[in-house]
Length: 321
Image 1 (cartoon, rainbow, N blue to C red):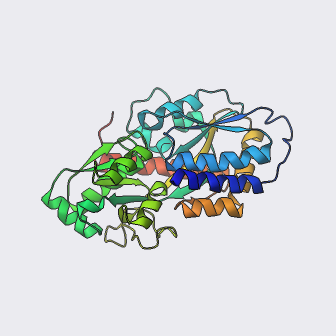
Image 2: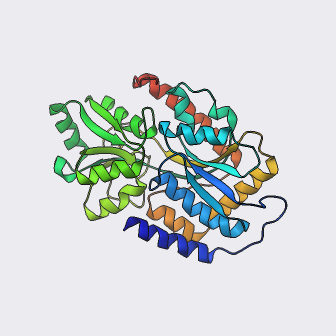
Image 3: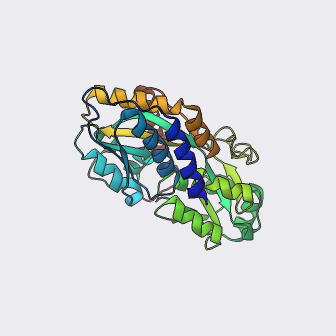
C-alpha cells in the first residue's frame, strides 16, 4: 500500500513538471542514479522523486539502479570508479562520511567523489513493536536495564548513522543494546512490524505510515527539532539525552573529475526540483526535510559529518571491519 501511494505521488509530480528539451551537450542520453541501498528505503524514495522530476526537466530518462551491500560501499565505489561524465551519479547518504572510519576500504569516497547538492535530511528514530510494551524512551531504558543486550534493527551496517544513534542512546542511558544489521531499511521494517525483532533505529521515512496507524511506537527522533510529519514524537534532547543529534542526510555525488559545468547544471536542476511545491510536500509527508543549496555548502556538511563520525566511532567503541 505504501508503495502504491508513493507511485501516485510521483506521477502527480511528473505530470506537473514542465517538459524541457535538453540544452547543451549534457545530457544527451539517459543518466543513471546509483542508490547504494535496496529499494523501499529513504534513499531509494528520494532518488525516485528527484529522478522522475529530472527526467522531465532534462529531457532524458533518469534510471534508478540499486547497488546495495557492504553498508553502501558497493554502490559508492561503483560511482567513484565510474567515468566522470555526468551519467553515473550517486544518490548517497552519511555513509560517504562514516564508512571510511569503520571499514578498511581500497578507495577514499571523500576524495574520489564530489558533493553536488544535499537533497534532504531526516531524523533517525527509535521504533518499537507494540508487543515490546513501551511507548516512551524512559520505559525502554527501564526495560533494557532488566534485559541487557536487547537487539535493535538497523537498515545498514556497523558505524552507520542508524547504528550510531542506537549505540549513542545506550551509552548515555547506561544500558547495553546489540545492533542487528539488515541490508536495507525496508527489510528491517518488515521484520520490526511483524515482531521478529522488537526494536529498531531507522530512518523515519518508511516509519511514518506505521506510526500513524499504531503499527509501531516511535520513542524518540534524532534531530534538534521535531519533524513536522512526526509532531508527537519527542527528540532525544527533549527526552533528557543532551547532545544526541544526528541528521541523516541524502545527497547527490558525482565522480571526482566531473566537468564543473555538468556539476553546476545538476545542482541547479536538483535545487529547482526541491523548490517545487509538490516535490516538497512528498518529502515533508515522508518526514524528510528538503534541503538544497550550493555544492560548497554540502561539501562542508560532508566534511563536518566525517569529523563527527570519526569521534563517535572512538567514543562508542565501534569495531572497525
